[in-house]
Length: 339
Ligand code: ADP
Ligand code: MG
Image 1: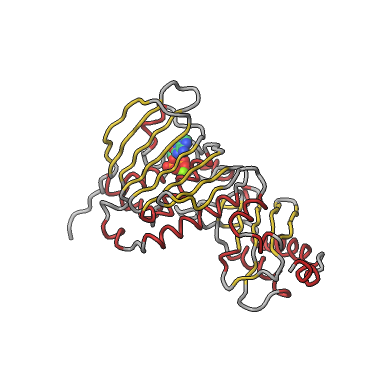
Image 2 (image 1 turned 30 degrees about the vertical axis):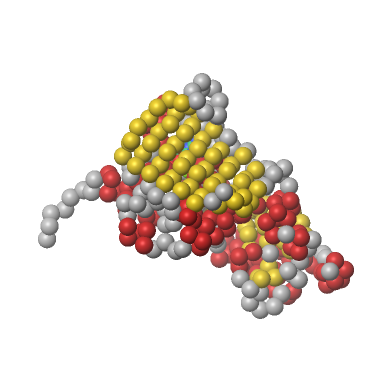
């Protein structure tokens, strides 16, 4: 047996990066979520070749202080929590401090950032985790990240990527979801110079749904609003006449975060069951709020999974709220009247 050695930081980062950054859409997710956390009201995402060769994310958020720059790309460095207790009160989308170190380990990154208080901005280059230069430059307040040549130094990972069109599709899916869950932010998404999505940021969720899904779904929306001790829910469902053969139209967000969760799927689908055919799924855009003490978002580095302390209560809350919303409507008449 060879002797045991402790891996060097660069290797540790590359291994860890694989858990956070599986494909270009994960880069976009992490960077856009950082922009949201930074209080941006305008976020632009531009990609080329499905994000494999080029991703640029520009925001008008807080920017990064010059004194924070040495920590930005270090693993487990975050401005969002201070200790394990804070994990019980997470209000931000990020908190693990892993995204930027992961992205920097497996791509060529250019960061340009400026806070409102600072006179000059900073331009910082890092390649495969190695700093390549830093300088002061003039730029507007906010932050721009450019990610080039994702997985250039991890060819095994690069091989598992799908075609640029498919990768771009995953990014588009993410952009649509984040736009629905944050109607107060104006999102622009550009693929090779073509604008694919542009929301106004007027805080009207119905407008965002219209922009993404068109008139058919929007004219069949029913608004949902419901509240109980530790839970609340708002947003829209479409009348059951609008159903799909897969779950792609079941959008829901917990505390502003896009997640996948079997309890929530089940609650939604049980409520729709009497109105919808087998193997058909409803359209939903639901914003759920759960007391931060009752939810664990620290399940996996990608933060797509969550655990609930009282899953059964949450199930009942969602199920009953939607059931009441559906029962309160004369669905059939309304569907035919609007057609
Ligand atoms: P996390 O989001 O979990 O804190 P990240 O690695 O994604 O970890 O980011 C590290 C830190 O860099 C953040 O905590 C934040 O302070 C800063 N940061 C990253 N992106 C931005 C941005 N777009 N605007 C302002 N600050 C940012
Ligand atoms: Mg983050």
